[in-house]
Image (cartoon, rainbow, N blue to C red; front, top):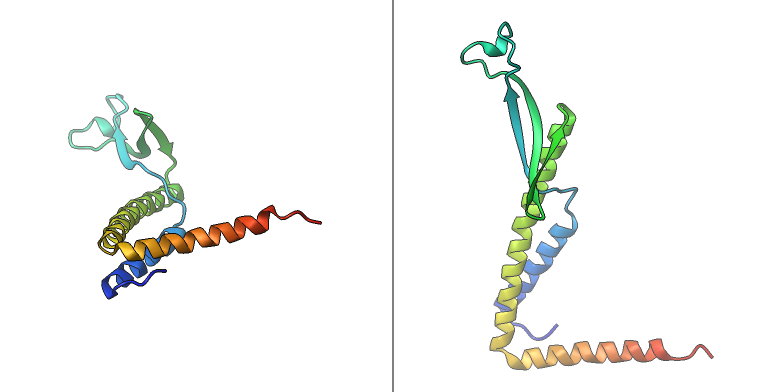
Length: 141
């Protein structure tokens, strides 16, 4: 890494921590889990009584795919808890990735204030690439 000020080092450390947190994410999925209740329409059923919520809950996961709303039925029981955990993990991913972009932008802004550090960093990266590419192009003789 280039010579960085204390504030920039904190940004780099925060970026590394965010990258690690993203790498440790579990299964995730976007959408919204909704509990639905329905009335069956039979006049003698409990759901016909005023104030009765109806039959249910029946769980569904709704999300938008290519501009269209897609709904999947989620079976009651452990699948609902698993789906909710996946949705929570997706929200966590969104939050972490948003923070990562903000930190990265701050690092980029800091490097603009110190152009010499940017040049040193670019030279380091270039020298690594050329040495790697030279060894990769050698013949196996």
